[in-house]
Image 1 (tube, rainbow, N blue to C red):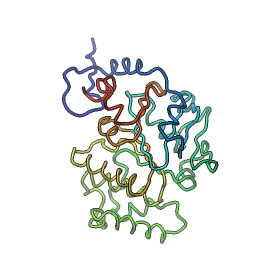
Image 2 (cartoon, rainbow, N blue to C red):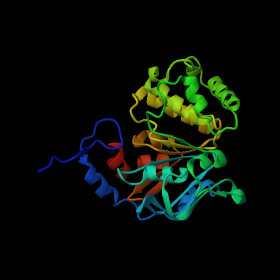
Image 3 (cartoon, one colour):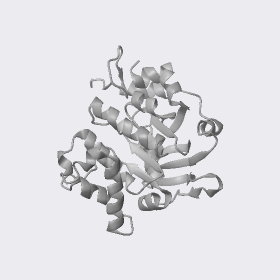
Length: 288
């Protein structure tokens, strides 16, 4: 008989009872009783900047998201948590134009000025809609310098000079990168590489940041640093952030809104701090 696959879940720290990945998925499927669009709108203050309506999306012929809805206001942060295979990253991929859209709409903007970006490709989503995707770890160019990596962030700008000018603004904001501007990216610490990945996305001056697993592979001290950087971008610069985070505790502590995804649908939606206090969420995803 095969050994049972154990899960330490979406959390850090010890647990009294370790449950299998299969059990996490089975128990998560029992959460909630469906989330209404009214609830989703209320969490966004009934003034959303990014809207997903009735989205069915996936890869090839495989549908992963089913009648999926999302709303987040300008300057708000949203964290998506859930078991493996729930469709969390597929939400980010769909916004950024990486999936096949079967039905539904993705809209961005204020009020009556919202733009339908459902069918845009990745380059158009970045340049026309102001949405940047910060990938999981190891997306820097290791043999390029820190400076050259930042210039690559401006590849859609009209001129190289404009990319260099915007890179200088990033260096002015982050002394830690400026001090290493001519170092190859491969010599950076894990936290510095993540800072470079975030900073490279900022060269295009996006309004919305899609952040995929910002804590993955990082030591605790660097995790804190990365979340402080994201908090500054939200609170100081008014960036809207949609995040997938395997460290559910850290993600929900950070986010204004949390969604629990199960099998391509929203099982629960609430303020981040409210989900932190939910005993079912704690048992399945927070190690308590």
